[in-house]
Image (cartoon, one colour):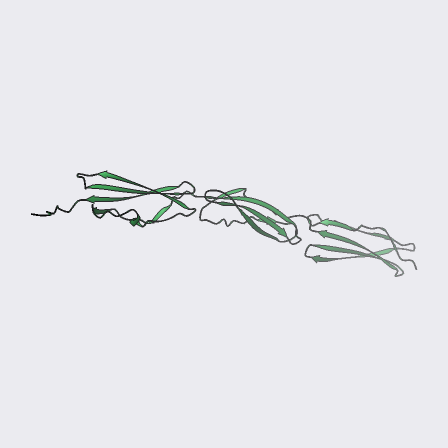
Length: 239
């Protein structure tokens, strides 16, 4: 008994998951008569691709059979693609950059992660590297420069009110007990004192000015006036 013989058959092929799966067919002949061909297809899916198995079974009128199998292997060898990644963004000094770019892949789900490298600058910043990876380990990267902007000057959180003082009890600059903060960086403090004359030698104004300057050059000034007056009458030492 002689089984039918396949005379035209498709070859095994390997495709990318982005490729279209082609149709295929097989032709068999038999020396004694007509041939019937049955076709079946199955698919085995893995994490990183799939294998399509196509089987043709040729039968003649006497029940002799032969078969042919084609394997179509679909692999994921294409990295994900970022849809939109800004090259540079500017954020406030105390803000966090919460945007996460979207990435797509032709074959599987995509996970997006990032890592930061600090950058120099008066308010700081970072170079953020985005990493998109698919289920098969294909990766794509992109980068965003994130620059922090500081346009707010330091402020005093504790500062004295202007006062009137007797010439014998002038408060010291240290007694001002100032406290200050800045939302971004360290603060440099400078101090200047100026005395302005009044109507008499012991009536005058002391103006003490503190200047707060942050690393980005934002500054604020705070003025404490001390009005010095002579309100004590002379006292006879002897009569």
